[in-house]
Image 1 (cartoon, one colour):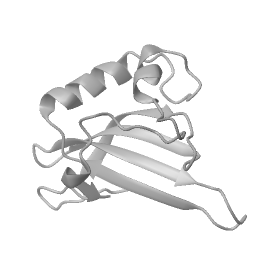
Image 2 (image 1 turned 135 degrees about the vertical axis):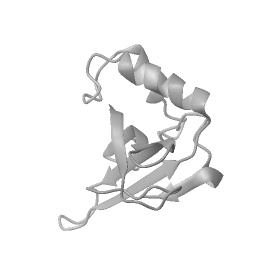
Image 3 (image 1 turned 30 degrees about the vertical axis):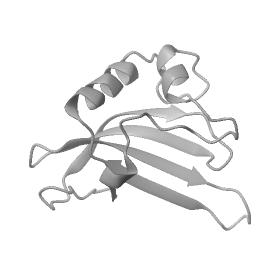
Image 4 (image 1 turned 180 degrees about the horizontal axis):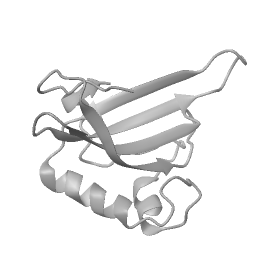
Length: 122
């Protein structure tokens, strides 16, 4: 899968690391990803959410990238790197505890650095 860089416009974004988070009241799959362009200096974060609720032939997904400050991306990278099982949402590690928080209604709470005003579609 080729993802387009929001800075240089090339289909050169790659996913450097990811962590699968617990499902919430809307999504069956939530994956927080660190993304980087292979052609320019862009570095960011993405969130992939998928829902398979409803009709058997209906599924929906959303993949959104975010521009984040370098220190926030580094913090997220450190958390993900510290997880012993980043693909297992049931992992009880500190990274899953910190990044998998949900509000009182059961909706996932993205990290504070993910500002929807700095988002772009992937």
